[in-house]
Length: 395
Ligand SMILES: Cc1ncc(COP(=O)(O)O)c(C=O)c1O
Image 1: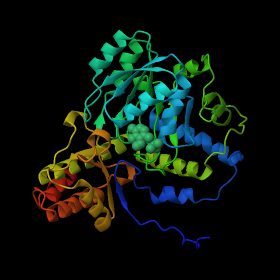
Image 2: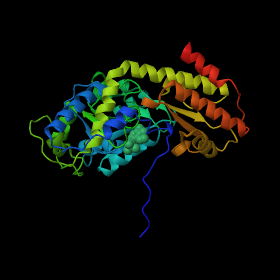
Image 3: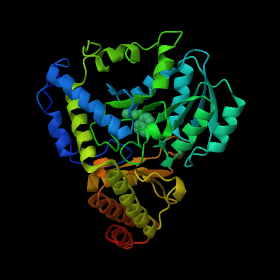
Image 4: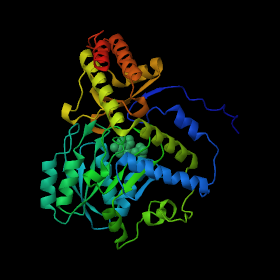
């Protein structure tokens, strides 16, 4: 037998990658409170508060609004496995990694994916979607990613949902990276099945996936001809526990402490207010952008399609991108992300999400990047980034 390992003590990092983001001490403190039973009346009362706070975060009155007990990928699967039946046609927009995963989900549910492709680093083009909807009148669902974390591109969710409604199509919308960072207006958009994650702009611990279903989406689940192939994610069963009835019945053992953490993270968002949180993300993004550009670095996504909370930065010619990330981690305890898929090796992804989105982090990141890139002899302007960022923050 191997010897007893010591208790795990994680280093204190600053998380400025694509998620998880820094978690507030208030959320960590909530996580450490005593575990109680998942059917304890006090816990059940807290679950109702979580649902109400999630309705606020999603800007919806949807009754079916709750956290799935697993990470964002499970929220994605919840939407697909409940809404897609064998033989269904689904229009899937792909402009990065996560649209590709949506296509996989459709196919694994026995559906047919009609792919609308856009360049990585660009928003989904509504004109292409309009053409696909016209060419496929049988399509049941339009699926797209609002905030493509692999590239930092933001798509016009309101326009895409409007197009879908005009064609009597349901929508599945990925808001994993958008919720809490930019407007997610589920009722105003008329979106149908929307999922998110806790570890991005909500700044909660990873491992939960808020979802919300419109009445239309719920009716489509009830009309299914075939049972949902996933037992764990079948909403008809999950709702015995999370539904609105007075009696909650056992479905699975809820992650009790993680839900305390989500409750506190959502309280923090409610305290700050959504509009203030969106404005904070935009202000710090503009400061980071100004600093990066002053250094001579370039953002991948055109200005009008950029996400404030995920900044994809082109790696300058001749620079070893992995060595830069390693130096930031070793010397500054600062995590930024690598490129994914088609952008692997070509970009860094700098997150400004939730609790990580603050003045100190913007300045730390710019100063640390400048120091590491300068030492490596990268072609950057030294000394310009911090004044440029501070001019935005203090201007
Ligand atoms: C846009 C998007 N969708 C889905 C996911 C999957 O979420 P998770 O990693 O929590 O399963 C992610 C995670 O980064 C994401 O960014």
